[in-house]
Length: 213
Ligand SMILES: CC(C)(COP(=O)(O)OP(=O)(O)OC[C@H]1O[C@@H](n2cnc3c(N)ncnc32)[C@H](O)[C@@H]1OP(=O)(O)O)[C@@H](O)C(=O)NCCC(=O)NCCS
Image (cartoon, rainbow, N blue to C red; front, side, top):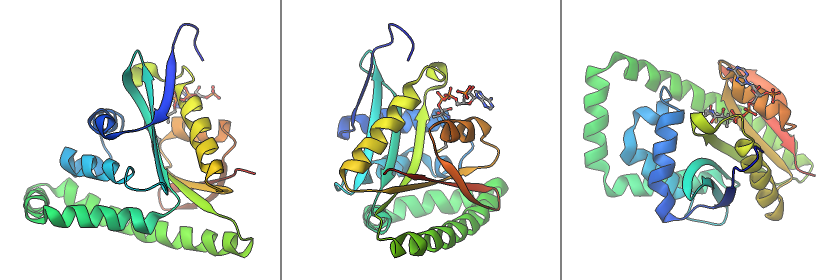
């Protein structure tokens, strides 16, 4: 950690959701979730606050959110929660999606790619889950980690990841998994540095796994 940089890592609260969305928009500009817009992202990250099975941590420097990490031990519940929230404002969201789908060919391509990715993710996770279940282990999935560009390379991501693993360990998690795009070389290097091991590759996604024992 750089000298004089006072970083605090805490569990996120409602007041952190908009800064997290801003950090997401800046860090994942060409990602599919980003194309769904700020409304969806706020709803998505807010869902991580809905139960103790999910975890979202924020890093602050001089009281400003400069990074976050989000994950869960209960994916199904997390996604059900997102769907319930979406249904509450389904019309508005569906109209925005339909317009984007009609006028933006990149968005249409991303939708197909994302559906293929979700199928691959489901297959890969259920494969490793059944292997893991055989050993009676509790798993968590890390969904996203990001630090604002100007503050990367200063150890903030390392502190975020350590705290994420520590909190998951407290919940009884023994195995963590994540998926990352194979062109995200910096993140891949970061995960390896943090002791994550490549488990498999499917399409353009590399899946990593880490034992917390
Ligand atoms: C992924 C992320 C959280 C890592 O945090 P970070 O502060 O950048 O991490 P580091 O600076 O320790 O970088 C990790 C490694 O990549 C190396 N690196 C730096 N720039 C790089 C680049 N352009 N290409 C490849 N490796 C690079 C670093 O040297 C470091 O390796 P080393 O410590 O062995 O020398 C951060 O880069 C980020 O927020 N990225 C955008 C969001 C994202 O892609 N998240 C991951 C997908 S969920």
